[in-house]
Length: 148
Image (cartoon, rainbow, N blue to C red; front, side, top):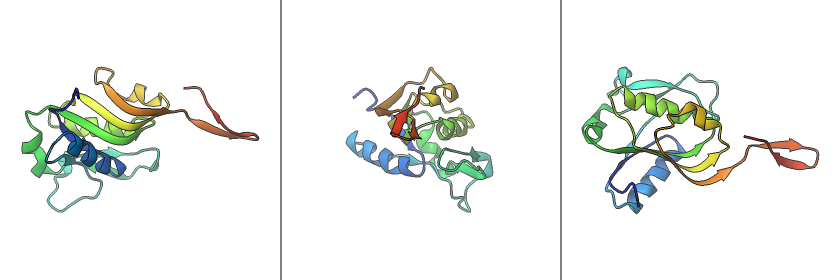
């Protein structure tokens, strides 16, 4: 496994369960969860705005628990989410980590939905996906894939 030595960072919500499962599979005792629910001990300086396909209205923030910083600093990091569609959630995660000069060595997702995410992310960070899915459009005869 090429990324066995990385610390995994999971995105809410479904990316958290996936990151936990991947961490177990790699033999890691833990992973670092990001959050969208602000806890009283969080530092607003460790947060960025968050919008996604599933919550397009925005108004949410993505947080890094300051207690997790000692785990992250000096480590190779991979960020995990359930799906990459537009790349906006992952971009927010990368911006959040960059606040502390943390740059992932890999991005992982169960589903790569279309290729729209490519324009939002740094092409120098490798993306690992389990499967690809086209964007579908409902037409009279059923669902049809749209071009990337």
